[in-house]
Length: 597
Image 1 (cartoon, rainbow, N blue to C red):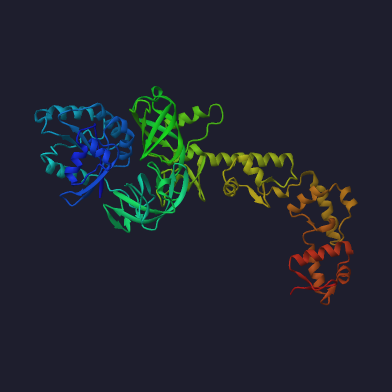
Image 2 (spheres, rainbow, N blue to C red; image 1 turned 120 degrees about the vertical axis):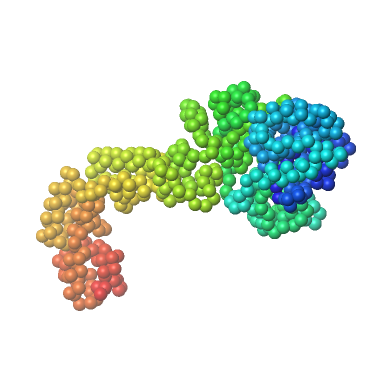
């Protein structure tokens, strides 16, 4: 199926034309039929001569119902733009033209209706219509003159619609789904039903979707699917669809809500936008009505020159880079112009100058999407967030030159290099000030660099040529640099080399100037081994002890070990416990151990 929205001034014969093409009554309300005036959206469908199924979304033409018209035309890829031959171009025609231009619609048919009332005006009205549509995507659209009452031109119109629809690019059937809701109601025995135009993605019975409503978000399940009063197990785009939903009341869903693939879309209330049509942003009112999909949301606009602005919405919407918006003056009901989303997740403006910096970046952004620019603007961003913003495909993507991929994070190469330089400088400075320091702690390094995630630190350390040992970052090979303490450690090594198990007493260590901090640095350097109760030995002491203990009768007592090592109980007990912890000896009971063979 394809979906076509009508457009055109009030009483130009849009509904009559749809009725003649489909044989269905698009006006759903009794009041509409009684007054002969379309108030809300109407729906009908038919099959064209080629076999192409097509659905029509019939929109109101009166200026009072411009919001309803925008909800109907917003999600539709094709427009049937109608101008009555007897009345010619009208003020509402201009509003609908501006909406078509704002939405960037490029496929459609121009229909001159009611030619039976003014057969002599066809050329004149068509020429004016061509001039008015010259600045839109319909500038070269085929035109057909018809009389729905007499049936004149309907055959040609059907053939022309076939030709136009054949040239519409195929919509993607895979990837994330966003369905803007245009109706919600209850059917007895079925429950809640919503309708909308499926423009991309595939809907399947049983799908769990995220419903983003006026009052928050919730999870819903698709119980059933219909299109053209026929049930389906799945539906592809482009299609008019009706979804029977579970876990939600029809009263809780309104036009402008959206059904989404869960966790696949950014939900944003602040946008960076670029003007595509209409008035300069410096000339429009601050308070606006913004139309996106079927949604109409009050918003506040902050201009950054004539063509760029920051838009703050009254409620968050699922919008991404490249989405088209219509800006409307709520007071005059007129279309002020169109906008394209450049930044669906702009930074908060907290400090003086933030607005100017962001505005400068906004004016240089590519409306078609620039991953490198996005990563550069943020410094580091998660890959999944780039997908939500519409900058990466749903599956697979290669990082451009200038981006470092660190797990799930994409980091701008200059930012990564700056992190490395800053970390090296901090580590060098610390070690120059305090050679005995274990290094810069990982937590301090993360805070210093303001890393968005701790998983990035390991890559920064490695690429900076630094070492991370025990949660502390140092220059490579610097752990052996003990500075002025080195001579005292060397003296202690000399003494222990002479008598391996004669650990110095506390006063001896103090006389050498070796406190806890100095001993810890010497141990990190691999020069000494510290055991509990202040026992300090050489790192070779455990191996030497094992040689002596292996010669003893097994199992052996602590006293036997003390005698074999020629040491005191103060030293023997911590040493034996150390050997136990390494699995070299095994404690059997309170008084016996054995060597593990």
